[in-house]
Amino acid sequence: VHSNVVSTQTAHALYGGVVPELASREHQLHIVPVVDTALKEAGISKKELQAIAFTRGPGLLGSLIVGVTFAKSLALSLDIPLIDVHHMHAHVLAHFAKDPKPKFPFLCMTVSGGHTQIIKVNSALDMEVMGETLDDAAGEAFDKTGKMLGLPYPAGPLIDQYAQKGKTKYKFPKSQVKGLDFSFSGLKTAVMYFLKRETNANPQFIQEEMPHICASIQSTIVETLLEKLSMAVESTGIKQIAIAGGVAANSGLRDGLFEMATEQKLEAFIPEFEYCRDNAAMIGITAHFKYLENKFCGQDVSAEARMPF
Ligand code: KG4
Ligand code: ZN
Image 1: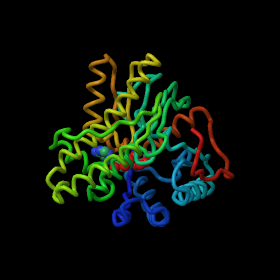
Image 2: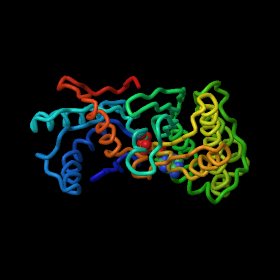
Image 3: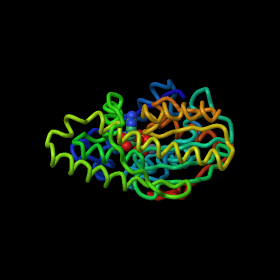
Image 4: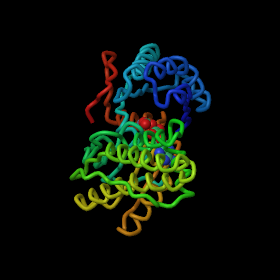
């Protein structure tokens, strides 16, 4: 990885979540400076580029269109091939940014604000989804329950910070979905009723109990995630487990993953945070594998908000 420039949009914090229209406008503003900075940091000129890779989907259509259009124009003007990348494949392949790298096959649980999936990774370009969320993503579960606690968006990192100072004093129900799929909407409702009841009795409840409430929410989410990952290990016999996506930064999940690895004699992998959250390096790494197999796309390619895995 020669450079990995991230432009974080702060405009959404005011609204308690990502506003799609604002996101695409911010993309338009930042895409040229970000590409220029990336080239400068890498010490590479545009003429040296061998291909242009971009995220085709899934995601917010407006933002994807900005990236796809820009990538197509750049590839056309430089007369080099285009490589379309699936966002969720890229989260998995972020594990190849640096050593230690997992060997194939491995199981990767991708946990972000938009996705929660358990993926069986047979090779760089051959992966299958074993389980996924039926409603909210793990990151959303953090962000939405955090919002109920009055925490700003994204609440995940803040819940994590409070949780480290608290105890799992309260019990929230875990989803009863069978198999390897997830559901987090029940937790949201349970937390809402719990807070309503407790703040009726004591209006200062949230302020007084914040670390314990956060620790309890976090452990519910983490236990749910790890139980399913454990089931996937059991059903496949695969001994290498990995996590990726923004929620992989969560201290409870990281500790829990390594504990699980020790207990079950598995090998655990977590990329550095810079490669866990949404980033360009993971798109480039995926493109590298596709380039080796001559998997390019044409100028007729378009963005896909919902893209099959
Ligand atoms: O992968 P990502 O950067 O963007 C996408 O959603 O694709 O993930 C962002 C998500 C947000 O929901 C954020 O709250 C969550 O990752 N997150 C965390 C932590 N850091 C980021 N959730 C829990 N604990 C954290 N430390
Ligand atoms: Zn992502």
